[in-house]
Image 1 (cartoon, one colour):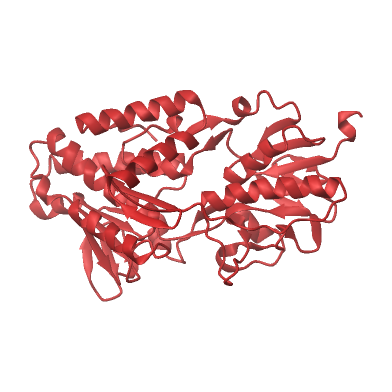
Image 2 (cartoon, helix red, strand yellow):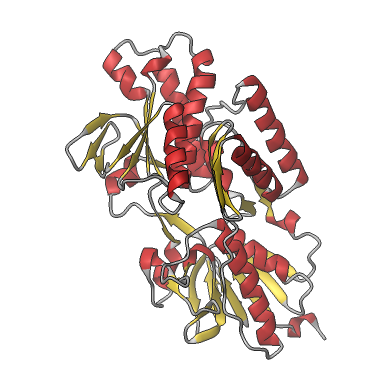
Amino acid sequence: MNTRELPHVVIVGAGFAGLTAAKRLKNAPVRITLVDRNNYHLFQPLLYQVAIAGLVPSQIAYPLRTIFRKQKNLTFQMGEVTSVDFDAKYVKLNGSVIAYDYLILAVGGETEFFGMESVRENGFQIKDIESAVATRNHLLKMFEKASREADEEKRRAMLTFVVVGGGPTGVETSGALAELISHVMRKEYPELDIREARVLLLEAGNALIASYPDELRKATLKLLQKKNVEVKFGARLTDYNGQRVLLADGTEIRTHTLIWTAGVRAAGITKRLGVEAAGSGRVRSAATLQLPGHPEVYVTGDAAYLENGNGQPLPMLSTVAIQQGKAAAENILRAIRGMEQKPFRYKDPGLLATIGRNAAVARIWGLSFSGLLAWLIWVGLHIYRIIGFRNRLMVLINWAWEYFFYDNQVRLITRE
């Protein structure tokens, strides 16, 4: 058969869901076009380490053309999809149109600010390479400025770092930032009284990592406090002007640094699709991941709204995205073969979050534990999941250097 006659599968997004789907279709009788606005796959779970000067972007990103160099049935096209015509079956990019027989929407997510424009404008986020590097540059600049500031009140504001959101990203970021200060900046800036530096983690609810078991939530709080992270519960932020955080109870915190990790929503394109949206802008899909009314379209990852057996939406996690990417690809193969579609069932592989050196919490195979063993499992799993042998090796070397010498190597302030 002429390859042009094969069913054309278009995958929008090269995150975990899109990447997994493309790989699953490697030897299938289909033509694949993978579309992404970046020419690389980003290992999002370690992006916060770029922000706290632990890793460089190239260690957690890998060129898509290299990943799929040997996959003959796939073509990569760099571009941003602006709209989809479900009736005519094509996606529109800036300047071009791509027709499809099957479409996988794996567009991912973006930061949700819940309407707080002051936070969007004046705060920092860790959602892509650019925002992570901007955060790193700012953090390092604060220490440089503080080292020259004679006024104690101004200096303390420069050395106060506020992280908003007590989910896994907020917990990992605040723990890593506290270690950067106590292990590295203490030596790097002897002219500063490092005791003036503060890391505050603000959580609007009454618990950290709320989806985790109670014993792990308590262990996380204890580990953070051991690293001198100040955790404040019931802290609902109402405004941030770049110099002062204002909470709903009237509390003011003077700071030049607010890192927002408190919300994620489906990528903006989902608003323009003209389909039913659920919470956080996610597209409501059938149990088979198909878009209602358009069975040739599959919605996966952060863009998909699908409930579990308890009526709760599946979390916006990489593990969900990976499994959905595989499931969507397999359902496309079933459709091509005239077979019945298979409903998606999420298999929870467990929970992991690190709080820093020798400190992590885990729930695996029904067992909850924390400390060194959990941290070693976290390290091993993340090294394994990074794409590219060189990247794995460089990350391992970086982490080993930091572990034995208490030194983050990537303390570079670069021009943005």
